[in-house]
Amino acid sequence: MAMTEPAAPTHGMPLHAAPPFSTDATGALLLGGQTAVSLAARHGTPLYVVDSAAVRTRVASVRTLLPEGIRLHYAIKANPLPELLRLLATQVDGFDIASGGELALALDAGHRGAHLGFAGPGKRDAELAAAIDAGAVIHVESAGELARLAALARTAGQSARAALRINPDFELRRAGMRMGGGAQVFGIDAEKVPAVLAAWPANLTFAGFHIYAGSQNLDGGQVAEALRRSHALCTELAAWAPVADAHLVAQATPLRVFNLGGGFGIPYFAGEQPLDTAPVRAALADIARDHAAHFPETVLVLELGRYLVGEAGVFLTQVIDRKRSRGRDFLVCDGGMHQHLAASGNFGQVIRRDYPVWLARDLAARGDTTFTVCGPLCTPLDVLAREVMLPADVGPGDILAIGQSGAYGASASPAGFLSHPPAGQLLV
Image (cartoon, rainbow, N blue to C red; front, top):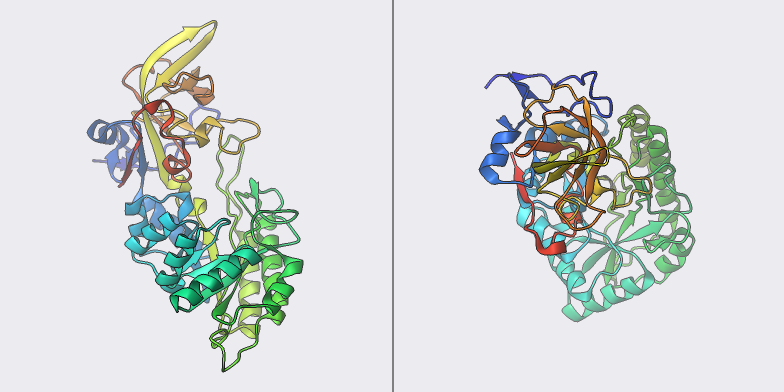
C-alpha cells in the first residue's frame, strides 16, 4: 500500500490542520500501515486506535531534550491500555501510578520497585500495602498518610520507601489544570515539609521529593520556569532530610529521587501551537548540571503522560444518520461523550471547543459544509464537535476520526452511561 506524507490542510478545512499520520494513495488515513476505514470494519466502532510508531517517535523526541541523568517516566493515568503499557515499558525508565489498579497494570507491563512512583491523595491501606510489596516509591500526600504508611510497614515487618509530594508555593501558569500553589488536596504545603521531615518515622526510608505543579501547558517558557523552581524547592528542602542513623532503617542510603513532574501540553484546538521545547531543553540542561554538582547520587525524573501518547491516538466513530434541523446539519454517530468525554468538552473545558475531526476515507477532501457531530445518547450534552467543516457528501457509513485522542479517552469517560457498549481500544 503506497503511503504519502501527512496531508496538507485544504482551503475548505480552516479549523484544524491535518493529522500527524500518513495517508495511502487515495488520501485515506493510515494508522500503523492500515487504513482507518479497514480497522473500523474489522474491529467495529467506536474504536480508539493508538499508532505505536507515533508513540516511539514522540518518546525519541523527548529523549533529545533530556541531559544525561534525567529519567523519563510515563504517567499511566493518561492511557492505561495494557498493550500500550507493554510498549512503553521498553521505551521509558519507569511508570508513575495513582491507584492500586494502575499498580497492577504497571507490574503486568514489567516495571516494579524504584521504577514506580505511586502518587495521589486518598490511597487506601490495601493500596499502600500492595505498593510496599512491590517496592514502589510511595509519594506521600499528607502527614496522616505518612503515619498510616509507617504503621502498615511496621505491622508487615517490611521496609518502605516514601517520597514527599510537595504542594509548592507557586503554580504552573497558563496550565490547563493547576495542581500546585494555593490550597490543594495534592501534596504537603512546602512550608510544612521541614516539620514533617523532622518527625520522620524511623522504619521508613526517605526517598526524596515529588512536585507536579500543573498539566497541559503549551508555553515552553512557563514549563521551563516551573521545572527550575521545582528543582530549586527540592534543593532547599533537602537540607531538612532525615539524617542517616546506623541504628535506624531510615536513611541508610542518600536521597533517591527528585520527581519534577512535567506539564507538557499538546495542541487540541484551532489556533493552538505545539509546545516550544527550546526553553525546556535549556532549563533541563541547567538543572542537570546544578543537580550533578550537589546531588550526584539522586535521580532526576521527568513525568509525562499526555505528551507521550495524546497525539498518537484517534477515536474512530461511524456516522449512523444525517439530518438537518432549522438550518443546521447534524451527523449522528455511534460514538459519543460516554466513550470520549473529553472531546465533548465535559472533561475540564470552560469554553467548549472542538477537537480536530477528519473524514477517514479522504483527508484531502474539500470541507465545504459545517456540521454538528453528535453521539447516540439522549442528552444535549452528547456533542463531539459543534462547528466542523467536512465534505458535503458525508453521510451514514462514513468513518470520522477525532484526533488528539491517545490520552484521557476511554478510561476518562463514563462508559456505563445509558448502557451503550464500551468503545474498543487497539494499538497498531
